[in-house]
Amino acid sequence: MFDFAPDPDLPKKERYRQLANAAQALIADEPDRVANMANVAALMWEFIPDLNWAGFYRVIDGELVLGPFVGRPACIRISMGAGVCGAAASEGATLLVEDVHAFPGHIACDSASQSELVVPVMRDGAVCAVIDLDSPNLSRFNAEDAAGVEALAKILEGRI
Image 1 (tube, rainbow, N blue to C red):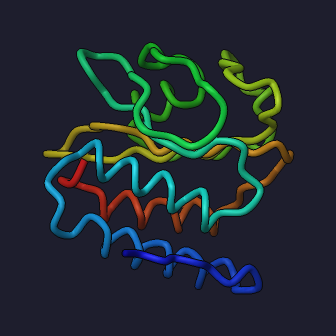
Image 2: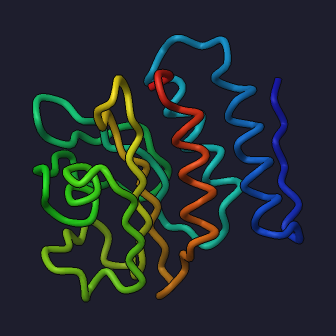
């Protein structure tokens, strides 16, 4: 049994380090990609405060398809290049959006979302999925969050 309980008073950098360690422990010996995404989505929900959605979109046949997540029901399919997730996937780059309503082409799956962080996950040199974090707070995410989730994405390479 795993009992990952982050200390809410930890500095952000340490919280992300512990998140990465917990993810590594959970997925190290598990070959099933969906199981790994599900556990990492749950970990992100536990370790990253002020979220209203945490999960994955998988690249399948040239579009993003909803993967494991924690939060309210979400858009099932997103075209490459559309919205924050599609833009991050097509560019292969992290996107940190302080105000989603100011992002051209934003897709509002949950009207409560105000800011978003999307980080691509690579497999064999190509984007295979994106990690998507939404917050009901404007400007919730910063460069430290992006670095922490990018480190997590690196751990997931070849595991999802």
